[in-house]
Structures are given as C-alpha cells and as structure tokens.
Length: 222
Image (cartoon, rainbow, N blue to C red):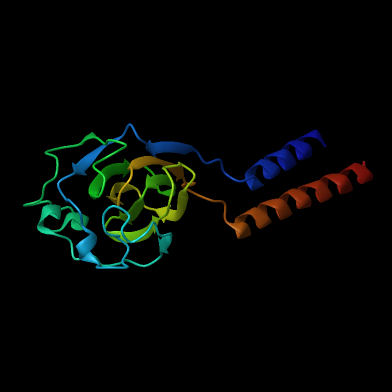
C-alpha cells in the first residue's frame, strides 16, 4: 500500500502547475537608444490631436489610445525607427542612460532592445508627465496622456505571449508644458517549456487506480 501512496503522490505532483519565474528586464536604470532632438511635435496631428500644443494651450487632456495614431514621423526619427532604421535621425550613437525628465513642450523617443531566452509574457508599468505612445517590434501597444505627474502605477499593459529572441520596446514621450517625468518597469514572466497533456495525465491516473484495484484484490485473496 505504501508504494501505491507514493505513486499517487507523484501523480499529484505531476498535476500541479509548472512554476514560472518573473524577471525585471527594463526599469529606469536600463540603457536605451535615445532621441532628444525631436522638438515640439504638436503639428504632427494638429489641434485637438494626441499631441497638444505647447504651454497647455489646448488644456491638459486625458486620452487613451488602443489604435495606432499613425503619426507622420519627422526626419529626426530617421528612415524608419520602428523597424530599427535610424539613418538620418537624431539618435544617440549607442545605448545611454535615459533621463527621467526632458525639455518641456517637446517630445523624446526611446528604444529598449532586449533578448528573451525563453518565451515569456510581459507586464509593462509606466508613468509619464504628460503622455506616452508605446510600440513593441513596430506594433502599436497603447498610448495615453493625462494630467498629473509620473507614477509607476499610472498605466499598465500585459502582453500574453512573446517568443524567445531579440525584441525592441519603442516609446515616444510627450510633453505640453509645466513639467516632464517618466518611470518604467517591465517584467518578463517565463512560460513553461512543456505542459503535461490532459490525455496523458488521465491515462496515468487511471493506471494508478488500476494498480490500487489489483493490489486490493491480491490482499483479499491472501
């Protein structure tokens, strides 16, 4: 009977969820490519757009974007910054420390290049004064702007699955007067490399029950 109990214990362990681990891959100490030569980009989407005019002349709006605003990026962004082509842009020569503040009434862009050893989900926390637009590998994730300072709990976004390999988190920070500020934290949660198939676990459990039944019959015959 003891051996049966041991086998049942192994079965229970097999049914438990596989452990995952979370690692901070980006925070305010992470180096990134930096572009602080963009100037005031309010004219890109005109009055009432996501990028308000300077000195809070269009108020201090609260906006959340789920779709790409498709901004017509200026030459200062380079040939195609969302595809990794910075030719002709005003980018840093390499990764540098990203300042938490920048010139008011102007925009700045950041690219964090990172590598995932395993397939992972991402949890992004970001706070900004005043607004932010975020892409991953050139794909738009979200955009937001609101009154108030930069708080790490201001915005959060979960990306359910991201394959192993090299990736780029691309950020455009916006300001329309008063002050600027920025905080960020990105967690990568590694996914299990394999998960027991339900059918296999069912057969395993049935086999154990069968062993227990046979053992019980043998004990009665004895």
